[in-house]
Image (cartoon, one colour):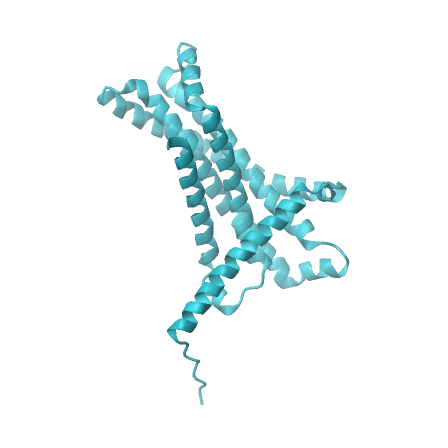
Length: 265
């Protein structure tokens, strides 16, 4: 004799959906606050804490640094060439390089770096954290008086955030160099005009928005994937494992929209 599954009414399903949504976002906010407090606490940077963070930063950043830098260089060459040729055909060559810097350096590279680090580092680290929780490693740390959040989660969050910021900063420098070489070649004839145009684009307000956007990108991709790894999920949450990924993309999109408003309105 088979047991029939209980049939939930529409209000019950809607209530469960709203509760799951609110709980997921509350966990992200709470975990972000905990990580922020621990990250600003000097006690997190003792000898053991520094060693764990340094090791995790090395493991997360080094394997992807060269590959993403080469990818950013190729992307910069292709986009610069397309924009310059298109601008020349319409008689707008004087605006081509400024357009490249605004689109590529200000918008595309920080977002691409954050998503690349999320896929290669943050999401796998969240899966590792879930494996540690399921194997009892986190509970074992608590039993011996250690803080699993400080020892296992904080180094992963710091490493992912560091990798995102490092890749974005290095790739922006590479993109600027590739843009200059694509237009002026291997000479210093256009250095004065390029520097003047760069200063015009990166005004103090735009620079502040760019720095804050890169920072919030790194925090979003570092914290959100760790939430599912730290907390035990019920059956309904396991059926929607892509929910965490969707929430991360939603946060990245929101940050990007706010930065666009700050830069152009």
